[in-house]
Length: 246
Length: 237
Image (cartoon, rainbow over all chains, first blue to last red; front, side, top):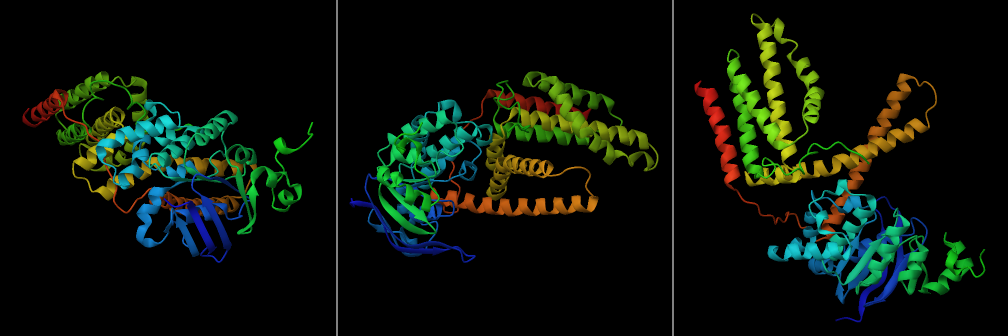
């Protein structure tokens, strides 16, 4: 087992239309570490997350659990990295919740006999009861869909969770629920988000991105308390860190 | 958002709902074919078909107003198509009546089939009956995303309406509609892209994995027997 879950060196990526999305990104994430990825819209957070399992391939190297992400060993990489997308409608494409959750494990070659247990466990992990298994995604509320999307990722038992805005558009109750749920998971976490309070709750370490570059990397509370840094990158000091607010 | 589902009452648990999807697919399609086969003069057979479907409808526990409503929604289209019949030579009016009767009966068959079988199971049934995988997969994506698409259309219309004041020239209206359709296409295209990324992220490599068992029971046999009996009766009587 490698000490580092993720090692990225000199990663560059431009979208086909020429937009420079990532520029000389270097970062290492230790196994079991929880890291928040923050920055203004268009900073490159989602693009970076899409590099973690080889969906996008820029120049430079990305290593996951010691293995270089290259075409050869993508199956291994995708088993390691569970990527949750921003819009659950993009992620839930099967006729039923159960099939959606089973999709990943079946692709990974988990025997069909073990599938029901996996589905059951994943649903339990996101605190949805068994009755959800047979339902269709468009019958669910947005919050429920988000949870099912997470269940789809958890069912693959990844060692690295890469979550893109997992709490966006959730009501405060469901959001809190989700935070507790993620906090209880043992996996290495890379969390792309605008929700700075959530980052404080979940991640001791934060990486600030802007314009495709890493602008700061350090202890979450320290970075977030730096008003100048925050303002410079389209962020603001979270309410909970403002000393004597009303 | 609220949608009307093609399989709105498919979650009920009547004896018809418990049948295997394949049984219902074969049975109901055979029934529809038999209805089309009934000769125009045989009013007893028409009545019998209606009676049989009424019994099935009763067993299915689908609310009668729903069945009637659904039929009425589609009937105008049938009438429109049948409108030419009276001018097509002698017995024109009889032909019109028969056309409308047959269509109505077939509609009832379809309403019963889709509302006693969850769409998912219908797809699975089709697949097991040898329908090509690519077709079934496409149908399943259609069923999944038609609602996402209609939501998107609804939001776009709301956005348009909230910025539109007073009367608008028809040419402007058409232009707006054009750009809306264009936007919708681009959005769908981009969604398809993200969707594929999501699939690949979960290990998709071109082949859809399947895992789902379901078996026949005496009920299936009984259903097929009733349908077969009816068909035999319409053919020989």
